[in-house]
Amino acid sequence: DRLAEAIRNVLYRGGSVLLPSFALGRTQEMVNIIAQLQEEGQIPFTPIYTVGLGRAVYEIYSKYAEYLHPQATFRPLSRFERLGNVWDNNVVQDLLRRPSVIIATSGMMTENTPSALLAETMVKSTHHGIFFVGYLDPDTLGYKLLHAAPGTKLQFELSHAPVTVALEDIAQYRFSAHASRSQLAGIIEGLHPKNIIYVHGDADALVWMQANTGNGANTFIPTTGQTVTVEA
Image 1 (cartoon, rainbow, N blue to C red):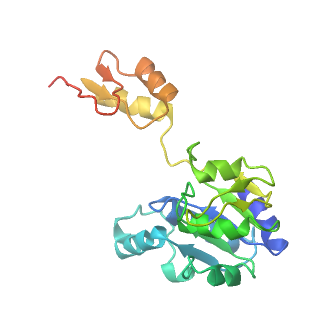
Image 2: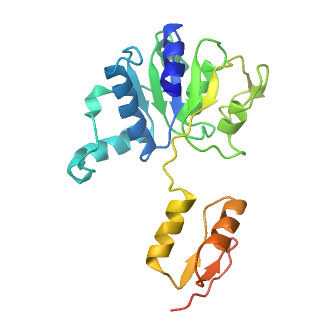
Image 3: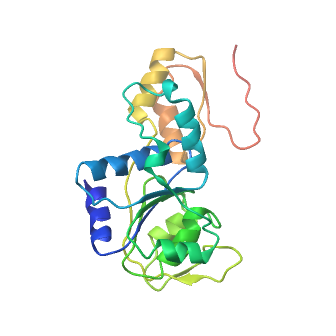
């Protein structure tokens, strides 16, 4: 509901909405959520654009749709517009003349990716909106933009000079695809493993998982390059 309201406000004032999204899973989820919001009348009908690797992944999903969850609502790719060459500033300028919703990789807005190239132009104006729908690492451009005050200079394309941010309507909405701590703990409890290696998480989260799961198993939080010997 909060995301729908934010999108609605931007579109009604004539702006475009950028949703930086991860290519695998999140892009396909978001385009269908936006389409559903339109069909339910929560946001106005405007073009929904996809660009980047996420669209290519959608094509694979479409080809093997019979393997998706039976209850998944998966609209045909033809429902969504293909965005052209975002490295061409004329294409971006023309796109932003009319309200639309754009789902573009990368989700963390890495420099030189489609979401960063679009944002480079959008942040110069005040009527657009950029809404992150996934995790942002503190070292990424996306995180810096989310926390940037108007007047901050950020570099979106490595070969270009930094851009002064004027846009204020920048926010983050949680659409986590990860299991919760309790769900992960439940999986471990059901498997009764002899060895557990905790990886790919914040340091505090890894320590919590090691302290609260395992039930006597050999547990490891290895550092990069460390060799772990597990019990057979």
